Image 1 (cartoon, rainbow, N blue to C red):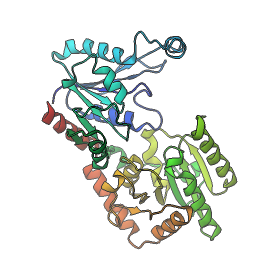
Image 2: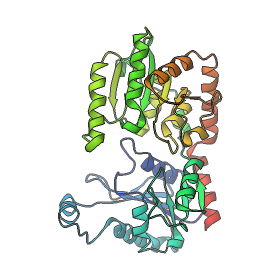
Image 3: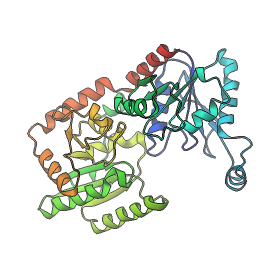
Image 4: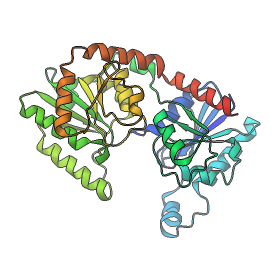
Length: 379
């Protein structure tokens, strides 16, 4: 496999300390790769610039001072040394030791890809998109990786891209086969309670309020069900996202006896959270490009009940590896589906089969091999 550089957008550092699926993918695939590679990402003030994370993988963090960002990006809007230029300069420094031009895999940013290709030969570049994007600035000749066939079909249709490969997301098999887990009382939960888990952004498109209302309906009918919400509820958002965040907080306050706002939990700890639940529900109102939450829950042997939209259906197979919510999604329909799923005679069998499937097929080593094979076809 040729040497490659994973380039993250200038949003989060790596490894992420909170839910950041793109950065988590980069970190795990690079760390487990058997070919020399480099991760380039944003650096936080207290982090090392260079950190070796395995025999073959190194992280190079780009630090940009607060004063620089405030003056050149916020006030003047004329950035003399933009992130794309810093990335390419970093690559060129490492190229001296590589002895050849590495493959640049630009992660989840069309604008960053277009900026970098002005400074680096595009024939040595790949764009990896993890979810839907506007395609106006996406050229048909781009070599593109997506995590699902659903997303590949979207970009083929919208951007007329022919050169698309599917490389899925994954899990750390060793981590998810551990028997350690947090105790329910960490979140004020009791062993005799039925726990529904939601993990993800507290955004409108995720169907969080619909799920909260569904759990409320079930309790009104006499079912002893608690809802554990994992996700950042503290960070103030902007516009409609902030309005929705406040609605979630208000509703959670009204449901305080049956709804636990647990906040954001680092990806490295999530394998200890899923086993606390009897069922993980993904009530997305939009189309999921993949859905790491479902995959991770399945790896823990916890059954999943998910929205039948998008790429999630490629690995959540009804009555085989999981269960699907019925359309149209509403609090009433979600409540019924939760109740029916919990009473399903095959619940434990389906959950066990799902666990075996994920552990055997979606380990990060499998993902790394899939990426290596894809790059070998292109380069």
